Length: 391
Image (cartoon, rainbow, N blue to C red; front, top):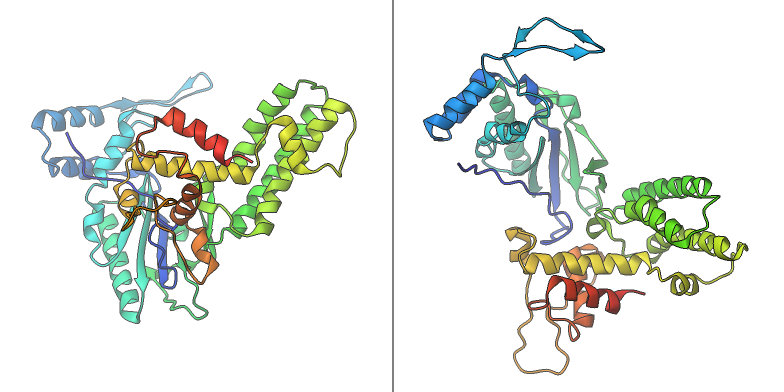
């Protein structure tokens, strides 16, 4: 049994950074409630996937002719027959969902699409009004597909977001079922806030604010703690983890943003010193405290995370052909004493440093003489990477 659906996230972290263009993205939860799917339509979808008849019959027996009831507070409802949906929380639910939307991407002719669970993104580069018309055509095809498959589309949850550096971008009003879609200045996707400039300032500010709240709760709840190890473990789990979630996407390049994030850890280090010595000092350097408690800076940890991510891509631990195909390797024309493994990226504009691939090139080339990214085992590579990049 095979299913052709593959799920990818939007490559906005710049594996192919053509940010001078105006890229417009339509974000939506295209199937807000899979439990409303008609079983008749679903059976038709299964029959069109050329599954063996025994498998189709098995799925039919799993979904049809079943009696259901609701149990709540020792009360049991009367039995009823379900005509749509799958049992909530079932193991087969996600597989059946994938089977149902398996043909969705085939309806889009002019735009590219990205799927992850029940999230759908249509995106296209806007170079003229014709591009906007073509994107609207794909939106019409999407609505038609939902209608044929008896799915209700929550248009209020659909929005348009444009990624561009142009001062006067080409904006167009897009419609679904004659209702104009709202245009957003930012969108939250899997916990990351994407803004129109892709500098992630809004996400960083939100993340720092939440981290300070967590740190405040952490201090109040650990007043009676004296163990340095226990305090570190709690800080790593409840505060630092939130500052490193998906850092390869939003890793800042400007010093002010880097320092804003580092201040949270510096605050914790002074608190740790207070717990150790009983004195709360404000004028102690952060590097001295990091050395004392053997806690690396958050910036260096993000560098290590970036290098480890691409190490896994190159060595097949992370299976993503799109990312792997974007990686270029340096092949010098002649033997040089100092030659990086990857090409150096140059640009007149600093925004190129935002892209994680080029940051990986720059970071790894500094230590390429000490590491073998192709033959080292994951454990040895990670250990050596920590030693070379941690500050």
